[in-house]
Image 1 (cartoon, rainbow over the protein chains, first blue to last red):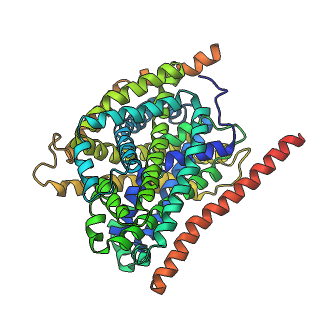
Image 2: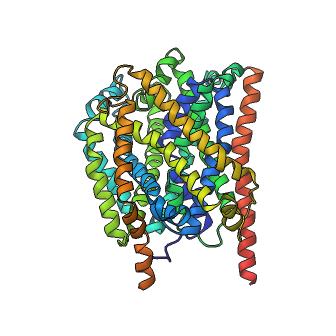
Image 3: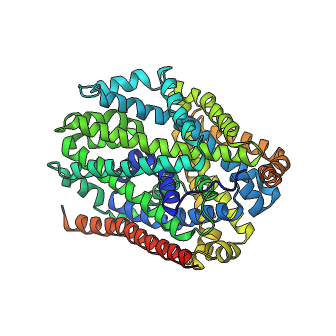
Length: 487
Length: 41
């Protein structure tokens, strides 16, 4: 490993980490989930869980990275002990499995951006026709390769490459979403979208579903508990703060979600209010790749705004993909590989293992379901590792240590030690219970794409292999450090 | 827009966007302090 690899400045770290956090989930999931879960009431619960899940876990990840300077497996070995390498392994597998199909999603965004640029989405039904003829077909392999190829090209130049690219893409992404949001709120009838988004239904706050959806949104779109912040934190300078950076990323990510929510819902209500139920109920892909182009096509200068929309989506997806690629690469570097061979292994695995998701939407949705719920287990593992290391020790030595810009009180110890594990277990049980209702007869069948059985089977395979290889993982995870020290 | 929706919009946007801007200013200030301290030493 090269210990000289570090971000050039605090702003480089923050922009790259924001790039990791802001992904397609902010643009295509947040508006839909907020709209279908009580609008203003959902937003209250969503803000509450920013403080009760996202930021506390981001603090854990930043402090692990700064303290251990190791990727997911090595960090767990150094904090929780060598018997817990398997937990870090699960975090790495979960994020890598997401990377495999997220590259496919990034490819879809590129394809629609190209179609928007060439004016191929303007006609009635053209977006739907493109989606049907492209997603889940061999054509999607080309854009999957392109997305991963671009990611590999960026990570090839190490953390400085990531920083340089993020410094261009993230401000551009923010500007694009801001322009789209300003355009959307100035459309005639847009205030109905704002009213829909912000009107609270206080009775809905008594429903557990609103709170669980808000917690899920925080778990999925902030990147907390994925191991990605930990990976970037390895490269933070020694003088860097932990807590203030975590707060900044959490608020920055949710600021972008809010902007995207306003942009999407104002556009929907201004252009086609009669179809709002169909639009928000169309799922992530349906909303983004079928409905949004149709709405933009009906808007004055819609072609330009369509380009901005798919440009923003492509940039958001690519910067998150880069972080996932770096996580997998970093784990291999810790095992003694040099950066570029490690990157080629991680990228090569992504190219091959992402192909089934490119070729079949059922495989894609299955993987999204299995590893999306797996992220909650990853979050739980981070809380367990932090507790084993000693929450007070972590708070005093790393978070509130030298160079701290924001002192963290004992509330963080209570949240990470008690609340986060309860939240993670509740979320997993709730999602698996919900899945039981989707297919009452086949809920335990591991070959059904959205069953409880498929989640349990794939997790079990990963966990059994990791437990069998635990000792080897624990020993190998510091090989890179030993190699670096020797050289 | 109804008064309750307007109030919620101001509160939520104020908290999320306002919080982000305040944290950003604090980070800029702290970073400047660290850089100045490093230069002096």
